[in-house]
Amino acid sequence: MTHQPHDKPLLGILQGRLIPRKALLELADSLGVFAIAITPDSEIDPKTKTIKNVVAVQGGNTVPLPSVPFPHVVYDMQFSKGKGQKRRKHFREIAKALNAAGSHFINPYNSLGLVNDKVAFGELMSRNGISSPSCYPYSKESFEKLLSEHESVFVKPVSGNQGFGIITTTRSELGIELMYIIVASCDTEIERRQRWYKPENVFAAIEDIRSDEGWSQSEYFLQPSVDYFPWDGRWTWLRASVQRAGEGRLGVVGIVFNYLHCSEYGGRHDDPQILYAKIAENCDKSAKDIEYACARIALATHQVLEDAIGQKIGELGMDILLDNNGNPHILEANNKQGNLIYWDPQYAGTQNPGGFMNPEFNERAKAMDVNRNKAILQYAEFLAAKALNSGGV
Image 1 (cartoon, rainbow, N blue to C red):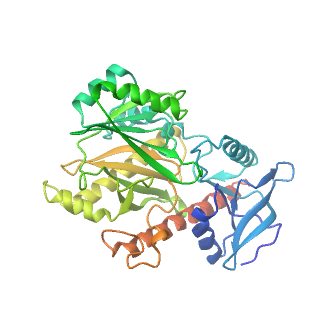
Image 2: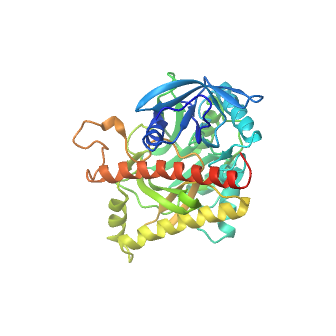
Image 3: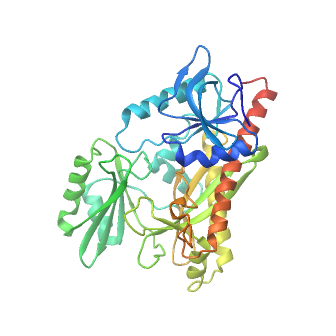
């Protein structure tokens, strides 16, 4: 469907790169919904309430649009990873202007400090009876004590940043492994570094990494691992996508099983049923019981966060650890979930396009991606209609 320059977009997507959110634009186009991507090249004019240099998909084709009115609803997917301070400032100014002009946000504008403050998040979960790994102050004494008691300890920045700044320390027969994420020299590829240290040298090595990577000015805390269930010795966790959709309904759109597989950032995604079944073999819970427990804790966490900020939240990605007894623990919530978290198109054209251990998961994974995008569009329509009915934008 072709839209005219004066048409007001339903949805504006704040996104540094077009490709990760192109599927959402394509879905909107197929449904006759006007959605745009707001990129680093976009410019705003608060006086006329227009945005210049945006991108849309119309009639199946990606087209640049010279100018459109401010959108009814904003989906802020711009991450602050890496060192792109100029880009971050650019998108912050756009988001601020859109909020001031009355655009609504899928996730409330500038209101999710509890999600980004991992210590405050953990304390909130504890007060509400939701199991979450404990947090401890960052110091040499605390770190060495925790590492002597636990197989792994996470060294984390208080303000989350899509996994950047986190240093994972793990004991093994070879010594202490330090693992963390950096932006490679090409500014797009993400890689992991691993080093082995003697126990007495670990904290100094962590301080050196923080200094070398520019993380030393950030406030840090310590979080020991729970008795998590490993997959072939790898770290495992679940990502549950909790979203509001049509009429503002809240639900779990999909859950994916993640495990550390190679140097790619974020681990490898796979079929969660495999993980449920494996854990169920050695505990008194069925795979279905474990699945339901994960969905319940994800929804409960979302509700607690909404109650705490007093506003509805459109989308959160819940990271859940499962222990050896099949009990779920909330690791953290993410208000910007990342891109293509279920189905990876880089494997397209192969026998197993998603690269999953269970190839039959391909179709379900693709369906979850579609459902996730549908929920975004449905909730955007709900917010826009609600605003119009109340005399808003």
